[in-house]
Image 1 (cartoon, helix red, strand yellow):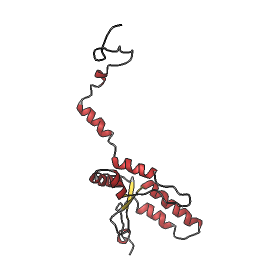
Image 2 (cartoon, one colour):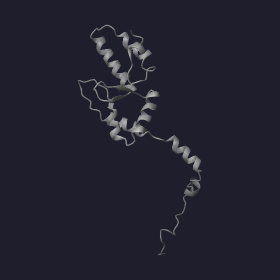
Image 3 (cartoon, helix red, strand yellow):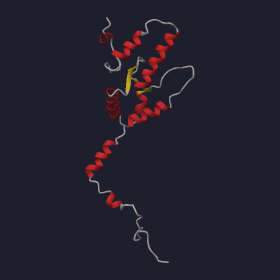
Image 4 (cartoon, one colour):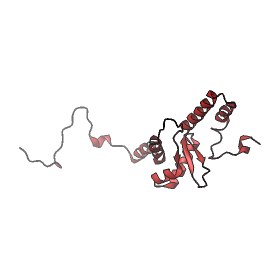
Length: 160
């Protein structure tokens, strides 16, 4: 048997295989472009993980929400979190809500969860024969996509 070390031996190429060196002839610019297209948001990943772990309780119909302080404890760079939250908010992926707890914290909800929450409340009130359900439709049509700030004042809604 021939004595060959792994560093000097070469495997035979199979038919249809290309040499790894010729396949990786991409320029640095092309590699950077590919990396930019696959740039994942740490903030979005953390939000999705927290959303998946939100407790589901049968008789409580609260959609998942995450506190900004929870997110800060999961992602190292707070500035990055703030930038990515702002971007996701402007893209209509999520909503932020100012909490009236006396602390400077915000709740974060994915927009689809928020719309689902509004729909559940609307259906529950409709089943109870409550009046004023048109306010939910008006809110969805005129407020949700145009007023992106965490809190909305009466004057912004046109209410005296």
